[in-house]
Image (cartoon, rainbow, N blue to C red):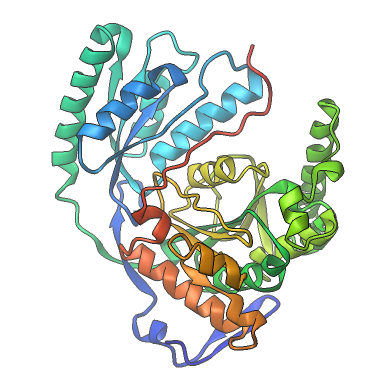
Length: 408
């Protein structure tokens, strides 16, 4: 266990901890592009909803293979189309993916070659199947099973090696918030994020709707004035998008479940949510699904929908996620371990099979925020070494790509 952890704005110190003795290392899979995975998945990536069933059928027959239930990929235009392409490619490049099999119908808006070539550029083994060329569902499935099995044999020999914790990129997300989230779970997550970035790693804060009313605080933490302006612009643009569909985010937030959980205003919700970011300077602002260009803390523009947010963060290269929840949620991911944290004792008691860390000890006065943050950081390192958080062990493979415009 840690013997001491001191947190301050922009500064963190570890003294005499087990992590010093371990030299902050974990066992990971070094990829051809230099990044490090903590899982060794073979990803079946359908380029559109039309090929998702075949992708699922293949994954069901080959051990070690996961499919992404893509519901997009056709009849998208402009930046919406570009975002889906970027996300699919980013997911294939995620360090947790050892190799990929890209499945297309043949007349998709996104071609298999476009996605496969970009993923292969990272040095990964990539194969393709086109349903219309294979002869239909059954023959495409058979071809895919053959190719996926061959890939599985080729990546099975890959071994973990000791790497620095600085190779980790952490996604920090929350959902189903209540009053305990901002008082316990989110501050503890912020401590864990600070610890990782202190040791040279990367953390990504997301959910733009949960910055509203607190965006000025985040902007003050930006590395440069220009980045601060980007954060303010991000939130303004989010509110304008809601108005385009005759909506007002301030009428829908907090949600009814947030309110019944003790959150009274959108500003109150946001002020609790941004604790997930810890105290470090913000190095940059990322579009949905884009990878950071360096180390440290970044902000990604994502929606309030939990599953779409996690998908975007993983497309940005995160290998592991923290998910804080007051009301409770079982949400996971097909590609990365998702560690659940709650500050609500009742939620933990009712959903213990889904929640990894009970942070209610903070409110009970039994532990400090720093102590729970230390426990959470330990859980991140355990997951990086192969331990399965509960969402992963229960095979919660929720998946969804964010849309920014309607289908045409």
